Every structure is written in C-alpha cells, then in structure tokens.
Length: 93
Image (cartoon, rainbow, N blue to C red; front, top):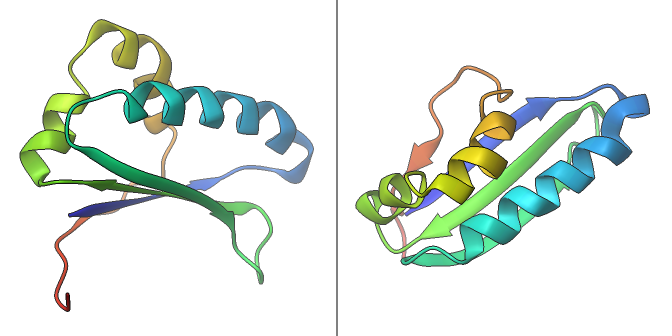
C-alpha cells in the first residue's frame, strides 16, 4: 500500500520545507509497517512537491500517524498537503 502526498511550496520556501519533510520521513520510518519513502519535485511545475510513502497495509499507515512524536513532527507538515485522496493499493505486483 502506498501514499502519495502532494504539496504546493513556493521555491523560496523549499529549503526550509525540505528540512521539515526530512524530519517527518525520519519519524515515520521508525513506525511499524513502514517500508520506504521517496520525495520529489514535479518537472513541469517546480512548486509541486510529492512525498511517496509505502507501508505494509493501510492499517499500518493509519497507526503510524498515532504516536506522539509523529503528531508533533509529521502531522503538522502533512496538514499542509493538497486536499486530495492520497492512499493507493497496488494493482500490479
């Protein structure tokens, strides 16, 4: 199961945002069921950033958001995401 979270961040603010993004990924990576994370910038719209998280299943992802350190570090950043569906299940292995 993977999560694609997109953010619109002005280029002038991306360095500071990257520090916060790294901290969020670090704390999420310590949660049970975490598999991998990738970040990227859209090649056509440089203000559009993406965080791709992979967890064993949707339950693991939802539980990963519960610990205090995640609520303190990752949730404030995730609350800045574009308002769109973000959880996907794999169709092709």
